[in-house]
Image 1 (cartoon, rainbow over the protein chains, first blue to last red):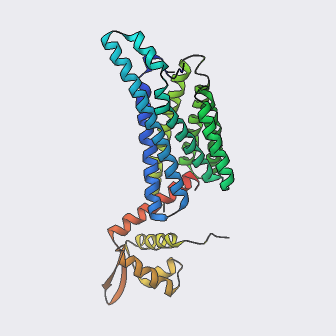
Image 2: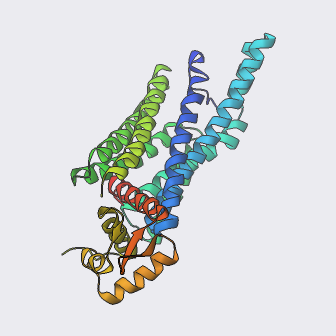
Image 3: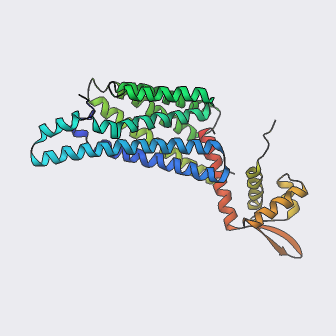
Length: 230
Length: 90
């Protein structure tokens, strides 16, 4: 049977708040990047917007699934059949296909799209990698860490790119961006080990919150610095 | 070698040049400050006036170019985009 409720019970609900914050941050960056694309017609802006909006959509799927599961849990608590109903929800395959599968696939595709902005690739290479991302998502059904390992790899590569950019003297906003992505990358390591103890899930979720908050700070810095500089 | 300016880069330089001179500048000064030929200046000015980012005004029998509120807002947006591109390395 599939087991996809990783969060400790006392943390249920908090992760939804974290995901909502993350969705808003990703959507904000994606939306602004799209408005910049409409002005400059630069392909990179469109790719960046698509990547961030895809990541945002992925988290919407995750949040809706988590919300559905949490709703069931809360409802069962209210009527006093907590153990029985909890196990039914926990072992169902439906939330995986309806929520977690699109979440994982869209996340990996979004991250790959973000990575490919910095490393232009031929159509053949892109096709092979996208195929492998599908395979990785499929295998994450039975081995959840397959998804987190793939996400970790892509995020690490993206973080390296942002670090290289920061080293070119691109300022504090670039530094905060690098740190934010580094935090989100490290959170994947904790997600990989969440089967050892549920506390790893909490640590990973909090690191993600810190990472996405960093992204928000980066964006605010861009707006402020944009006003100051010539 | 310096990177060739694109169209928006030129427009950004023109609007910034006007703004630096308290929002009003003579066409010849704008031409020098924006590193444009006379033909280029004429062409770009027509476009900027058409889009109401700048306007031509007469003062003491001389023609001046003035930046509009819309022009200031557009320049602000371009600066924001440049900062965004710098930060994300695109």
